[in-house]
Image (tube, rainbow, N blue to C red; front, side, top):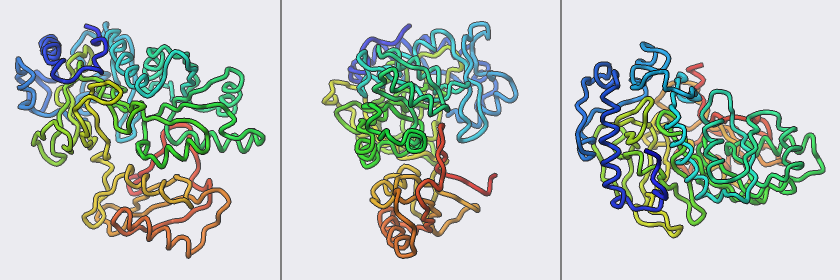
Length: 436
C-alpha cells in the first residue's frame, strides 16, 4: 500500500479509517517478527486489533535493538521478512552509540522517499530548483535515501556527497545550482574554503538561494537562519527531521511558520510519553514529552512503540496557513544530550540559540564535559567573529550574558575565529571527553 496522496494536508481524524486499515496489515507483518514473539524483554507481545490499544504495549528502545542485532546479525530478529526481500542496507551514523544495520525493501524505500518529499516540498523545493546534496552517501541513510526524497519533489538533484568542497564550489558555479541540502554546520566550512581558495567570491555571490537542512540541533533558531540569510542570501529551512531506525525524514518546516510538520500521519502512530517514565501524555498543543513511534506500514524491521529519545513540544494539531493538516512540533533536545547544571536542563539546541544571539560570536560552539556528573557549571567553548580577538573583559561579559540567558553558570572558553575547526559531515556539539 503506497503513501496516501496528499495525506499531509489532511487532519488526523480524516485519516482515521485508513490508519486502522494499515494497522491491520501491519499487525500481520509483526506476527512474523521473532523479536516481538520471543526476544523482546516483554515477549510475547500481544498486538491489539485496534490502534487505540497500542498505548498499552511495552516500549521498544535502542538498547533492545542493539542487543538483538548483535545476537542475530546482520539485521536482528526484528527483520520480520525473508532476507531475500531486502533490497537495500544502510547503517546509522552512530552519533549516539554503536552503528546499526538498517534494512529496506523496495516498498519501504518508496514509502520513505515519498514521506521525505513531503517535508522537502513544504520547505520550498520543487521542479524549478537545482539542488546539490552534500550528505554522506557511504552507507548512511542521509545520503541515498535523502537524495531520493529530494528527487520526489521534482527538483533536479546533484548527488555530490561529503568532501571535495573546492570541486563543489566549481560545480555550483558551472551548473547554476540554486539550492543546497546539507547539515547546518556545513556552510561554515564552505565559507572557509571560499575564503582560502576563491578569495574573489563572496558567499552570497555563489548563487545559493535555498538551503534544506537537518541532522544537527539549533536549526530552528531564527538567529541562526538570519545569519545564513545575511551571509549567503539564502533561506535556510529545517526540512529533514527523522529517526534513522524509523523513517529517515518525516518532518520539516513549511514556508509559512517555524515549527516542524509531522508528515507521516498516514504511515506512523505517534505518542508523547514522560521522558523518565511510561505515562502517556495528551496529543494536544502544549504537551511536551519524548516522541514514541509505531510503524503502520513497514515491511523490514517494523517497530512498535519505539522510544526515539527526542523531546518535543507539540505546538498545534490545527490546519496550518500553508493548508497542511499535519501536526506541528518543536524539538527541545535529546534525552541522552541533556546536561543538568544545578537542576537546570541544558540541551545543545538551547545553547545554540543563546550563542547565535551573541553578536560577537560566530555561532560555533562545543560543550566539552571532562568528567561525569554532577556539574555546577556549563563548560562551553565558543568562537569570536572573524577579526575580533579574545580578551578577559570580553570573555567575562559574554559568559555573564550567556549565563543569564540559559539560567546557569557558564565556564566559558573564548576562542578566535576558526579555532574549533570545521567538518564536512555532522558536527559534534556535545563532547564527553571522559568516555574517549
